[in-house]
Image (cartoon, rainbow, N blue to C red):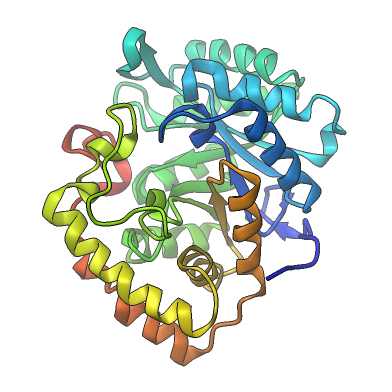
Length: 337
């Protein structure tokens, strides 16, 4: 399955930049799901850009800076205007892969920003966002400091990540918000009740990560699959024991629908997300050119009302086993409160 070149005419909210209909999430290129190859990662970034995608998402803490340096190498010879860089900040790392909470103080975010600019090799970031809500810093203080950086030209737009309705409204009262980055997929549909209506009211887009539920909605995870200790999924409740067994039964039902359309499970899951609205932009974590090419095929899939109903019946939102993060990480999600 092939598709024509992606256009970059999707407006990211009322105030955000024009982006491609799908974007590339680079987190998996820095060891979160096991070892990745830098050469193939850079080739994948180039393939995404060559296909017309311009939105690349990263975080300064992915691989403790490795991810930003990798992207910097990949885009060094590309026109800066051809790339929309979305960067998360604030998550604190320590030796041995430990986590130390979140820091969104104005003085800290200015510090994070200058290092990101250096690692990426750019003089501005298109969309800058706190990775999580800092419980010790009023969101107004964080957004106010970011607004000063917008005025100074170091960032172009402000985004949010994994926050709830109250925080979204408070942030938007300080400065226009381009988008909310949050997990959304057939398996993670929690935003539909309150968060999605609120951002639509405010003219804020959704950049959806986890569209393939970290490989669960694909052909890469099977019963008996084991994960390396450094792989996020080794600690994710949805990939453990009976939870994985139950979830893969749902994926099997989805696979039967995909087979009738001669597409992959992943393509069908992406296509479903694309039907949710033009204000929802999937961020796809492809680590290889092959996976990126597969993802592009979703843009060609047309789903009827009847097919959408069948897909949602195969994977009911209330039948998913396990939370999307381990208990300690769930407490950090303002979006889940």
